[in-house]
Length: 366
Image (cartoon, rainbow, N blue to C red; front, side):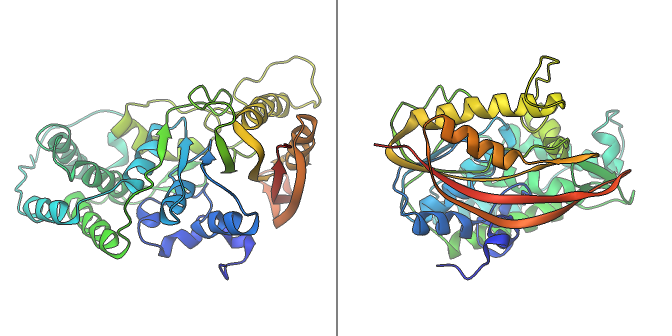
């Protein structure tokens, strides 16, 4: 059992020191330690599903523990990172290809300008070099066994080479200096190669689906042994927009949607709250809970990490609301733990209150 406290397990931070898990920092995720704690503490059985799989922490931890798993996410960036992290690799083959790649010469032009909101986030020369490397990977390198690893290394290096930094859900401008994207890229790829040598695990490759957790069209009824997941939290932050640079450059995604998609449709119809976003969120989460109940085997358990929401004038205990909704669907509540309590502040109103981030476990009766 991990000696990491639960308050840290429910953050991505512990993954920063773990091979492969650390390939792409995803602040909205939880840790490998959390997944293993769930499996051991609640005696979870496979196959395990994560319907909000993000960058694949649940899936990679299951692979490492030789448990079959599957996951889905609406973000093409998240799915790609998950796939690259959980794949089997021929180490000798990709090492040979990497040695050859390091010797590749690139012709980087010193002129030409691209006008777009993306280009403005880079020094002009850095952006030209980024486009040349991306074009090389998209075309000349497309069928190379190292391709996806190299592309992920480039995606991860993009923010480092830009003139912005992630600040919560937004990108804040920093310096305007030239940064050597090729150097950052090859350094990252070499780092990833070393990680694979440290943690080379074969088999139990997860199934990663493009699916909507409200529908789970591609998951059969009563086919899942357990669920470990963390749905989007109720708040007013479009945290997917924090990755809009990578989405625009590599996945042709010019627009982002509120909290991936949950709660995006805010109607003025009467509901349980005077905040339309709360009603939209709860309606969508009801659909998610219905699907989780459908796909679980009898006696199957769902471990859900979620927090309440903070608004300028109040705290909304959406975590408690989800537990109530789950029991209404027929789930039995097996455990309910507050992992940490967070002081919530708003820019204009100051301290609003305390928000609980919790882990609750529900079981589908036999």
